Image (cartoon, rainbow, N blue to C red; front, top):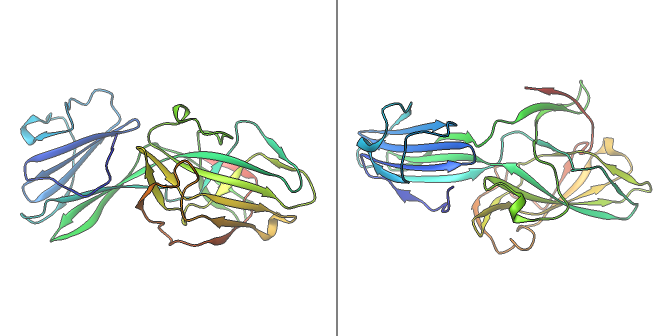
Length: 262
């Protein structure tokens, strides 16, 4: 597992290797190219975290990008999936009028690999740590494609229950309607979440969602600048892709899911 998100260098003829959940990733600087190989096989024939090109097995398949002879800088950054997600709790929960409930949601991270090209870092590839199923949120005329998470939202954070490649989002639901709210699923747009590193685990800034009388008008969502405690002192390692904001509106955050699109 990647333990540092700092920029590093990789000399010509050297490789770097890491595991990201079930995914094995190898990055090689060779001649005037950056090369990336990925595998989900348990046995990939690579020993250690770095080495010389002649130590690599011949069976690896590479994706390649051109670079200059002097280019050596690389940067690996975590990223959230490029689509919104649907999260479900372990069991449905009734939230009384005026009440609130805090949930933790684990999202399998994507890995962005940046390599120096002509003196500047550019993104070479974005690799998901897990393949998520696609689903449709909302009605057929006004919905959108999103990912259905395999893991369930939980009320408590126990580090031993989360995978190392999960990015943890804390969501505090506030029921401001006059009726009891049955929480069964949540649609979450990921564009305004930054990613923070705290004690070798990844978090996003915390958020709160206001449940209103009419879900058709959207649900108000506010964003903190940092993760929830105990990760509130975490270091930001990846900015929000749609920019930071303190408030936005989720369109029908709790609408039904029509179908799963594999």
